[in-house]
Image (cartoon, rainbow, N blue to C red; front, top):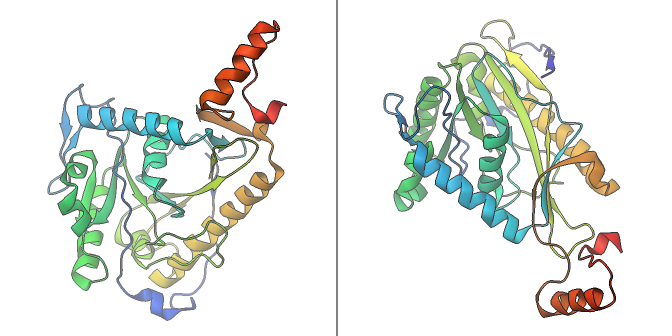
Length: 304
């Protein structure tokens, strides 16, 4: 994947000093534990971090793919994306938080593009207490909006990112936000990672849910160019890093928004395809009529 250098600014020069607080970002997603280094059925333990159950993860990812197919016409990744995600460094993927569907989309993306990696993600501690099985999918709990929760996040993020085969998946907006909302505002947790951990690779991921020609919506995804950081070599304060990361995601979201407006499916790689047409009795009747006339039945509205 393309790697870009970062512009430097003096420490403390970044605006919005209020972002230097210690609130954290959470996402209701637990990522994929790779099978390359662990036999089927094994579990991956990282100190006090979650134990990832391979069988449960495979089952839940299968369910996520099936569920997305039922409710969307397609899941597509922009061909302009900087893929594949390849790096020898620990990986931080951060995405916008457009909807409730984001965690299921992230599961599919992890399965497709993060083979060979164990993926972890923070989740609100109260939610994790209710849905405890997420602990076995790579989720770790943090308290929202407290200094203690900020410490939880940073300690566990540091543990995770000490292993080059690990990925940390974040939604730094820490709330649902419209995909076209600008400016993109992040909580401060992500900005502490470049100086807290060793060399890292960061990748912004933009996600949109749009209607094109069919009854059901499309899921559109675009991976931005990766960029690498090393402690001590780039003198940015945490607030400066936070602002920088938010700007890179906004650039990627703008590019995806432009592609979505063009409404050209051929510019995307289709990962999942769901139902097309009206569905139900009406489409069955249309299929019978086409058969009686010796014609091929075409369910897709976009091909009329």
